[in-house]
Structures are given as structure tokens and as C-alpha cells.
Amino acid sequence: MKLKAAIYCRLSKEDIDKASSGQESESIVNQTLMLLDFVEQKGFELYDIYKDDDYSGLYDDRPGFERLIKDAEDGKFNIVIAKSQSRFTRNMEHLERYIHHDFPLWGIRFIGMVDNADTEVKGNKKARQINGLVNEWYCEDLSESIKASYRIKQKKGQFLGSSTPYGYLKDPKDNHHLIPDPYAADVVKRIFHMYLSGIGKAQIGQILTKEGILIPTEYKRQVLKINYHNAMQKYGDDCRWSFQTIHGILKNEVYIGNLVQNKCRKKSYKDKSKKAVPQEEWIRVNNTHEPIISKEIFDRVQEQLKERARKVNIVALDENLFARRLFCGDCGKPFTVCYSKRNKRGERYRKYICSEYKQWGNKYCTSHSIREDVLEEIVLQDLRNHASMILTAESKNMLNEFKCISSFNNKPSDVKKIKEELQKIENYKVQAFENFVDGLLNKNEYIKLKEKYESDEKKLHVALQNYGGAVCENIEKTQFEKWLSSFTNNFNVEELTREMVLNLINSIYIFEDKRIQINYRFEFAEKKIG
Image (cartoon, rainbow, N blue to C red):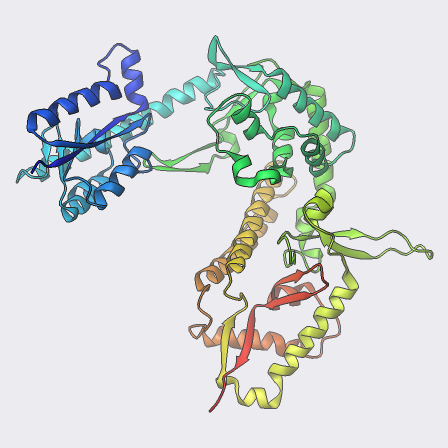
């Protein structure tokens, strides 16, 4: 019976550069022909050919590679053949994981045709490991070389992004030079002029969405035919111009002819995730391409952005009694504050409505409005009821008979709500950093906000980890007593405060049918005795 063999071929960016410089091409076609000939010579039966074009050997999230590993685990072949071990992987961790651990467990032999890597040959392992180290060192040196080359090009004003900013195209004569895209450039001009006319960022997004203007990612995918993720497939009719997209366009110096690059970099040559680069290390080159917006208009917009940011004042977020605790029970979006029209006596009152409804109207949700004073009284009364239940003499004598359960109700929607809360905190952190960069927050204010958001994040991550387990018996006694003390202190309270809301309440959901769901940090349920 013939052994079944799988062929793996990979071409990376460095190989393309070699071919263009006149060196031996490592093309997928050449690799395939070479390996097919090898399979025939050895008398193996070919199962399938797995290919990855323009993928680095440092990572294992390659489509062809992932398919090969899945089929290997399913036992669909006995041998994996690559031109060399480095074609299969340049990562020492993957070498040990797949070639030296998983493949032997699955009964699979690995062969590197050119470098004689063969897991069936005794004494070959040390040579493979040495080659693995050499391959990884090569990648590290190459990474440093590429970064140095990129910085030189960036300082020369060459655009190095894989995708152009919305409103621009790559010059057919020079891929490192930007030229305006007439259609998208007109949309950018409209955005700047609308903002200067007093229209807010959210409202600008609403106008563009209602007019059917494609968001930047969809414009690039559908019109420019760039290989982008399909936002329409993911969001459907909900694919809208966001506040963040408009904000990014209004802040981008590219529209006045400047290039600002090196704003983030990879954490490591082996890690695709990126970290922000301090502003003083950004590479800015002026007048590199034709501007879409005049410097005068751009500067006026920046002043207006700062002025509006001062009015909002991110430090004052907590002045809203129910900030980051109040949500729509039907669409899950946060509630926002607005003011009623003046009555006959000229009075106005604050109320909360669904932010989705406020921005987009009843196409996506309804108002779910509730007056602040009404909600405050409802929450205050419910707090009193809980305190009374917990702190009666009978309850105090039976504290040991109580169990602590998560305020999340063990439903998939609860996990979604936690993740949405985490995303909101992430957005707050980004906005705080931008305000710090723009000089709207000093260093101490920014650090204080950052620490607060990180503290909130930790609590949510704990809630996420505890999800699914109703009984929280591992909660420390001191935490329990601290929470109980909070209720004790607020037993006879006459006025609801922000501190009370933060300490005792996780979330409040307002439903269209007027139901209100208050999720406290911990709920108590009495154990049934006998």
C-alpha cells in the first residue's frame, strides 16, 4: 500500500524581492513541480497540494497551512513534504509544536527535500533544531533590515501603507505616491465643510449613510476592487458611517498633503499585534502629494474639534448619575442624556433615551425615554428594598445560609453585554489618549482616567471569566463584607449618588414596554432548608 503524501509550498514577500532582483525564484510553480517530481521518484501517492502565496513562515495563521494541519490531525495522509524546513516554518516554536510533537503523535513523517530534514532519520532532530534557530535568526535580522529600510523611505516622504487613505489612490507611475480619487475626495470635502457649518460628527455620518454613500472599507472593496473584509456581509443594512470614521478623517493631515507615518509598530518580529509609538517618534513629511483640503480649512476644523472637546470635557463623564450603567433593553446600546422642551412655565428636565434612536431614528430602535428624576426614584426605592431584605435581623442571622450569584443571568446575551461594556471602555481609553495628545488633558488627568478605565476593565474581565457559574462561593469574605457594608451605609439614604451607582450597580436596562431591569453587583438568594 502506497503512503499518502501532502505537498506544502509557500512564497513570502522576501522571495518575491529576490526574484525581482534577479536571484533564483522561489515561485509556487517551481516548488510544486520540484516536489511532485520527488513524490513520483519515492513512489508516494499524492493526497493534496497546500499552498500559501505571500505569507511569512513566522506565523501559523496561513490558509493553506491551517488546512494542512487540520487534514493531518484527521489522518488523511502519512507524509508532509516541503522544499525545506524553512518553507514549512521559520518559527522555532512551530517547529517544536508541529514537526517534533504533533506530527509524531499523528503518525506523520516530515521531509524537507533540499535540506534533508527527515523525522524518520535518527539523529536528524538536532540538525533540524539548529536549522530552526538559523531560520529564526534570519527572520529577526531581516525584520530589523526591513524596519530600517522603511524608516528611510518614510523620511523621504514615500507612502508605505498597504491601503491608501480614503480619498486617495496610489499613483500608477509610483506606488509610493498618492493622487486624489475624484469621487472619494469630494466626499472628504463635504465632511470638512459640513463640520465647519456646525453639523456634528455623528450627524454627518447619519447624512452620508442615508444618502447611500459607501463607507470607506466598502468603497475600496466594491468600487476599487481591493481585497477588504466584507463589512456589508457582516453588518448588512447596519453598515453605517460611524462617529469614529468621521473623526479620523477630520484629524488626518494626509488631506492637506502631509504624510504622518510610523504611528505604530509590531511588538516583535514574531508577533503581529501592534503598539502605539510615542508622538515624538512619528515620521512627518509635509507637501508629499496634492492636498484635498486647504491648510486654512483644516486648521479651522482642528480648532473647532478642540473647542467642542472642551465643552464635552471627558473628565466630566462621571457627572452623569447613570453614565456607563444605563442601556437599552432591546438593542443593547447605551442611553444618552437629552433635555425636554420647555413647558408652559419655562421649565426643562433631563431625560435619557436610546443613543441608537437619537442618532438614527426609529429605523433601528425606539426612544425608550425615561426622565432622570423618575429613574432616580425607581432605583433609589429598589436599593432600599434590597437593603431592607438583606439587613433585617433575620437576614443578618442567616448570612451563612446565603449564596452569592452573578448578576448576569447565564444567557448568551449577558456575555454580549459584558463585551459591549469592554468595547465602550476601550473607546473611552482611545478618546482619553487622543485628548492627551491634543493637549486637552494634562499628564496627571490622563493617567488618572487611564487607571480608572483599566480598573473597570479588570472587573468586567472577572465577570466574563465567572460567566456560566451561578455559585460564586470562591468570592473572598472581605469582598462580601465590603459589599454588605455598602448596602448598610445606604440603608436609609435619601438621595442617590454617583458613588452609590458605581459601587452597587452593574447595569440598568430600560425596555420599550417600560420594564426596568437593575443588575446589582451581587444578588442574594436564600438557600432552601429542608
